[in-house]
Length: 261
Length: 271
Image (cartoon, rainbow over all chains, first blue to last red; front, side):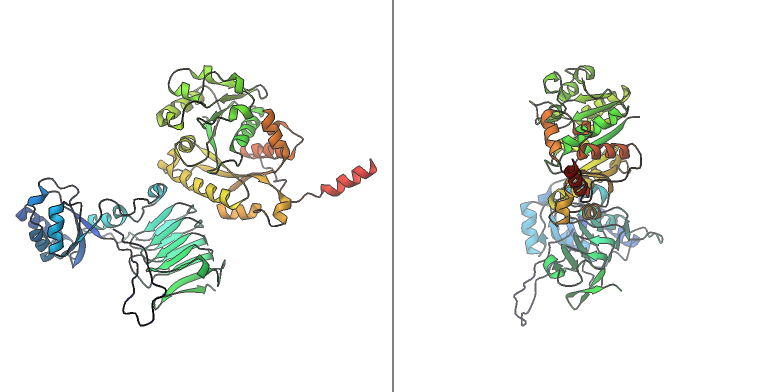
């Protein structure tokens, strides 16, 4: 589940103790359909045995959207404890009721809004490309943790132009686009973004916080370029290397645009 | 097998209906049985441009609702032998169109021996435009050489390649660009986007460039599709576009400032 966009204080003084920065982090949903202590614990244990790497302090959001039964009698703190014992760290609650939310506050769990985080995400994109919603990013991670396929590449290759209004996201890897990205289009990747064409829209690499991610393009005409939440918009980008082949990288929180030679 | 071609643009007023009328007339004049359907329910215009406004009895929505059969609703064009027009309803709205209804009529038309079905899309990206493009095999995207029109065309191309039935089946809709209201003089002065600029932004095949011309307005007011005006550059450009659509190789014209000014002047002097 991706969290909010960037917000940076440009006028903060140099001595500021902190800076608010945006990040985009997919979270796994723990969809609970019914609860019985022994059964739940047993199944969780089995799952953890299947994919021990995944169950290492992994943050999860508890979701009760499909809960079958009486929510108010659910022993939330007990459930949270069981999760913690098996390497899952519940951080928030979703689709719960008022009583459960009260209990959540006492044990310092956040309350997530109901439904998709990006309700306005363009519909057209959802067909061609998985958008940065929980369906596309978090759910597969949870489903496939048990299987490891050595041949599968997390990179995503797109051969057609990305048109205005479309959004393409490569979860867990690089995004390679063998055409242009139009103004009004948005491309996102957890890793690097390579564009063998002009970048006229928005490109966001390292959306899960990978500061070593880079963006490469044949012609920089972008509306926005962002790496791990550090971004530059059109008017900053126009100053240097506009309409030339460049790559963008992060140097100590500063987004650098360097020509590709 | 009938070929379904949608004429679309996103933006309004760029020349979709003018293009639908001209292209469908042009294809029919080359001997192919053609029908042009007005999808702009509630704002029908195609019948005016084709000068058959007063011959409309039943319309597209009547046929979808089963209130009339296709034969009763189709209007035979008086100029082009093989051309039929299926007019839109003026009194209904676009929600009267359903996927099932439109599919049924397209199938009936194909069964009736129509080779080309031209769908004149309404502006916008709402239901009417979606219905017009959903079954398309090919799209003619009409754009004017200005930034907002090109942007909307880009958007439409994206929707076309993700929302149409072909896209749902993992195929691509054949796409081509028709640039209308092109004025090479203004391009030379830097007041208008050039063909190359637009081609570069949209990265799609160029079907034709229709020069800006007063004959287009005259033709639509008179109800004669401009392609019948073989003297006018716009008519000739549409004719070239039809040739390309039918697979011929025709060199693009009317894209640069014409030198005929000098010839004309000489001619006038000697006369």
